[in-house]
Amino acid sequence: MRCPFCSHTETQVVETRESDEGDVVRRRRRCLGCDKRFTTYERAEIALPVVVKKDGTRADFDPAKLRASMQLALRKRPVSIEQVDAAMERIQETLLTSGAREIPSTRLGELVMRELKRIDKVAYVRFASVYRSFEDVDEFRQLIRDI
Ligand SMILES: [Zn+2]
View (cartoon, helix red, strand yellow):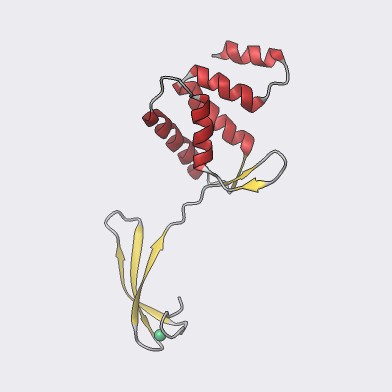
């Protein structure tokens, strides 16, 4: 940790304290070069995986985009914003706890379909039909049968 005053590289931690929620560690440091004191904050990095598209390109996980596609499928359906929020939370929690650095977009689509299947069957079929761009009619029939 470089001193912000003199750029000296050696500092000494004089005090360490956790925030009440326990998610931030605050450290009081003393510069061994100029003796000035400063505070650093340490927070666990919450990293959502990068989405790998079918063509191999990568994009940052975009919750707004995911929500928009879900809401499109849920258009004019009797589903509350709270239900969508909860579904979004479950998806992001799954991504976070997986610990994966990358996730195929197909897997992300499956997670969305799993949630939609739970909250609204019509939205599920809408999303799935667009998402899977059915190869044949039988596949679609099978999906309808599964519901
Ligand atoms: Zn210094």
